[in-house]
Amino acid sequence: MNNLEVFFFSICPQPSAFFRPRSRVSSQGISLTHQTDTPILSDTKIRTLKPKDKPYRLYDERGLYMQVSTSGARLWRFKYKFDDKEKLLALGQYPDVPLSLARERRDEARQLLARGIDPSAQKKTLKSASEGTFEAVFQEWWQSRLEAVSPSTSAQIRQRAQTYVLPYIGQRPIAELKAADILAVARRTEARGLIETTHSAVQLIGQVMRYAVATGRAEIDPSLRCAARSNP
Image 1 (cartoon, helix red, strand yellow):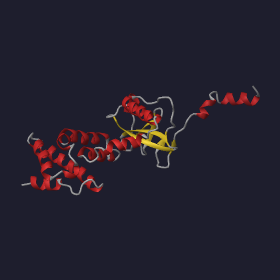
Image 2 (cartoon, rainbow, N blue to C red):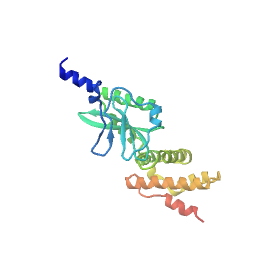
Image 3 (cartoon, rainbow, N blue to C red):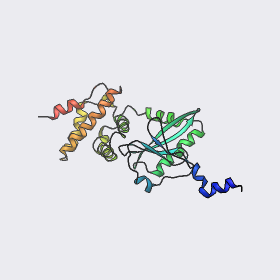
Image 4 (cartoon, helix red, strand yellow):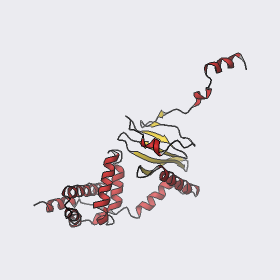
């Protein structure tokens, strides 16, 4: 060992520290942690994640990472390449999709890639079979709001839909829904004495219907007529 090497190791006993992966910021203002093949995420660590001033990412392994939005939403993403193009596949939101399930979905996507199938294209194909139903449009609308609302609010919206709305009109073609259909949903909830919940359910249906109108899946929002008919 020459004098220069002795000096180097005397001031830096762990020279590998110079080469540790560092975080960087993407062009979209998202803080990135370099991808690794060693799992770094655990349910314990995920539960402690807090929102920051900018969205940030934490990688797990083999393309799976979690993006934490400024509202605190923790979203699973799978980063991959297909036809030499970098792509992203949404895998759901934590805690609805826990770490173990996110890894399963990533592995399923990797299996498709091994067979020469683009996971994103496959997802769109499966979605198109039922995208005209109220439930399908609700899911799309709900997903579009994940980063705009807090996780608790997002969970409340989904729970309200699954309990008071989707069991009754979820599988109906959204373009065919009429005020009478929505009024029937409202009457079911109202009969249980849940007046405020009834108003919230009708408001939720209206938001989904207006999203359907804006995206070309429906022509009108019949919940407006429903509200008018329900008032004395």
